Image (cartoon, rainbow, N blue to C red; front, top):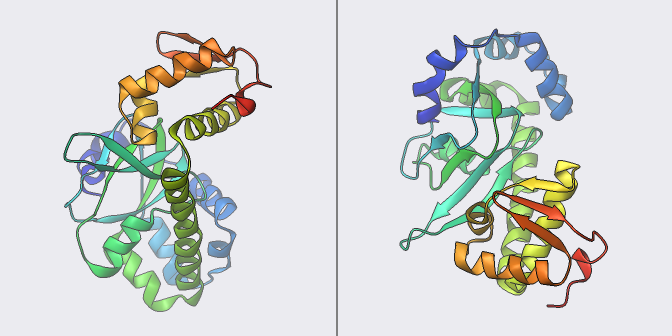
Length: 241
């Protein structure tokens, strides 16, 4: 990712590098990769670079050439499309254990990145160069199998998201999204703006605000500036839509 590469030197100087811990994180999230025994694989891992980025860091823009394959060690990356009207539509998220299928496609076919990517949260990333990605694809059957399995799994997730966008009303998608976010945060309070939710759902802030106010009237949530609180966890999945 080009924007990542441009920030790499600055960020890597700010935090000590612990490659061994990073390798353990990768193998814990991707057990198939721990089965690669080729010495060249160890060399590739040791050439990989670590960096930390704050939330809302632009990592890739549509049309840029993908220069690295990125492992997410901590945090979350959002991949999205930008419409002609300026609206953002989230395609998928990359969490620890996930892969970015758009970057794999870009690397495999030497074509520009066809979306935008930014960090949803503060994130710790490990970068494998394009050359090393292709080298691993050449010598390791295990790595090739892992890539293909990851593409298949991610494609299913994208299809599920597309299905929800096409067939479910926005109110239902909002309720499902809030439920997922509360569960992921393990908290009854979310630090999130209406604009953030609009970007996730491919809608506008005004429409999202209207739906949230309706949920608040139904006693599901409480709204405050930059925060959403659960008012009645039992009502949220049973809202009247």
